[in-house]
Length: 400
Image (cartoon, rainbow, N blue to C red):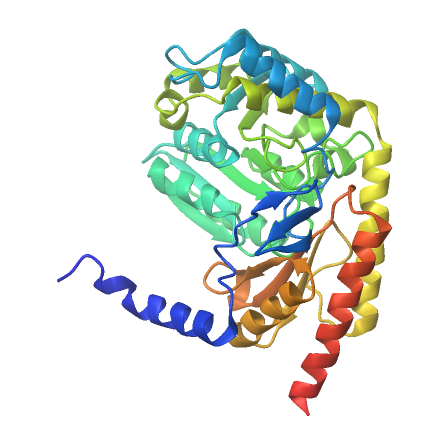
């Protein structure tokens, strides 16, 4: 049997859809960046509405200057893991700054947000005495962390505290460690977890909570500290994970906690020990972005104004949206064929969004996923609404 035989069915469907509808939605090349919300693609300027650049800080002056200075002083890369030669003073400083921002005592920086979850979960839970309980819609990196851990993994219904409560009650006395994994805002649909309820239930059953605020850091809460801040349980979360590749406008990730035992991960987490550490430029840019988030609440205000405008416009156009207004606005399509065609239609009308189809989406749903930015101008949003208006009319004609 060929190693590649298992891919043939999926590949055939993918290539057929791409041939029928035009561009490859999963291989778009941003040929030239014109700023945080515009890029040249195939010679045409496109409004970027699918980048997760929620606060629009990728071109912010202080972040760019910090990255340049870091390269000049510390070079282009560390050429080693955090466990070996890859920990610089700047890595340690960013860990302190993130911990201070969140009000936690400990923080560990990883090379990506994916590896932060992979490294934390796989090190914290071990078979046979530990059990991990995860929301059914958790990100792939959380599922992969469970698999790398080897501990028994139990799923509960998405955003359903009662479902978690039932599953915790069923666990026997032989279970020593219980780790509940949830997210703040879920990346595909933009729906938000009842974090406060989950934390209360988990702690009542003696379980720890790992909360991934990758898409909600900088976005939710009065200070931008995530959904747990909004729900008043920031200091009750046991392990807070996040990424630099969204609001922090860089590459990297972190785990923060008030448990001093978090430091054990530095010599027990394989993704921490065996991956090259983030580059000096990435660390410096994330630090500058963190300072901007701390000092400028107007970024969040602008982001939410933009999100509410787009959500209201899409609702009026008749799109079936997956969640109430948030910085992620996902519109359901009838099937993957329609979704491919709709994505290409938007590109032809000057707007890039994310196409998401099964099996990478919850409930086998095909969606156009838009992420709003504080950097989107009124003109940018006009282009987006105009493109979706034309798409709505085209879909209506298709159904006649």
